[in-house]
Length: 349
Ligand code: FES
Ligand SMILES: [Fe+2]
Image (cartoon, rainbow, N blue to C red; front, side):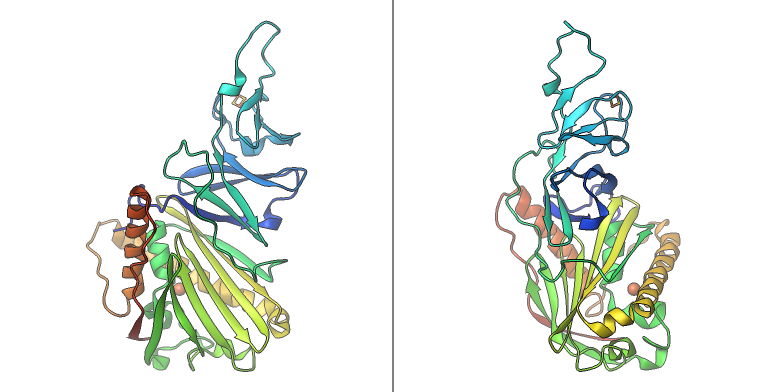
C-alpha cells in the first residue's frame, strides 16, 4: 500500500500556494514530498523556490531575507542567487582568502505562477536544474482573490488522503449531516467517467438529488469533478453563466503528513453571500475526514492488507494505476499513457 516514504509522485508540478501567500520581498517555508522549500517573491514580483537548507550549516533559508536578487541566510549571512542558487557572498571571508563561492549551490526548483496558483516542479533527480518538459495544469478560472481558502494537515501518507478524497462510499457515514447525507438517503448512483490529462473526470452531470447543499446555488447546477496527478481534485459547478470552482490540492509533506488545501473561486453572487455558511460547512467536511484519518491510522499501525472493491473503489484503483504509469513513463523517458478507460461506475451512497 501507499505508505512508503519513497512512494511520492515525482517529475511533476505540485501546488505550492496561492499568489497572495507570498508578498514581494517575502520568504515562506513549505515542505513538499519530503523537500524543504523556501518559496519567495523577488521585489520585481517573480516567484522562486529554493531548497530550505543552507549548504553551510543547515539553517533554514526561509528564516533569512531577500536582498537584491539573493536569499541571505539568517545564520552567517551567506547569500544565494535566486536564479541559479549559486553562493554570491560569504561575509566571513577576509581579503586574500580566495574561495570560489559560486561552486556552492542550493537546489533551485522550477516555479510557475498561473493566475492565482503557484506551482513548483519536484524532480526525482535532486540534481535536476533544467526546464521541465511538462507544464503545470491550467485552471483559467482560478484567478483573483479566492472566496474561501482553508487547509488542514492530515496525519497520514498522501496515498490515504487522496483515496479518502475520491471515495464516494464514505459520504453517508463520515459526512452524515442533515444538509448533506443521511443513512436513509443512500441510493444507487451511476456515473460516467472518462480519462483526462494525468487523471480522470466524472463527466458533467446534475448533482445527486440528495445533495441539499447544491440547492443553495439556485438554478440548475451542472457539476464536473476531475482528478489529476499528483493530487489535484477540482469541482467546477456552473449555474447559468456563473461558476464556482472548488480546487483541492492534496500534497505530501512527508511520509506521514499530508497537507490538504481547499480553495473556492467564484463569480456567483449567492455563493459569495453564503460564504460564511459554505466555509463552515467545508471546514466541517475537512475535520470529519481528518478525524477518520486518525482513526484509520490506529488500524494501519498493524500493517493490514487492504481491499479495494468494484465499483465503489475503482477510482482508488485508477489512482494507483496512474501513479505507476507516471513513474514508468518518466523512467523510460516516454509519453504518459493514461491507463484509465471511459467507464460507467455504479455504487450506493
Ligand atoms: S548556516 Fe547559512 S550561512 Fe551559515
Ligand atoms: Fe470526505
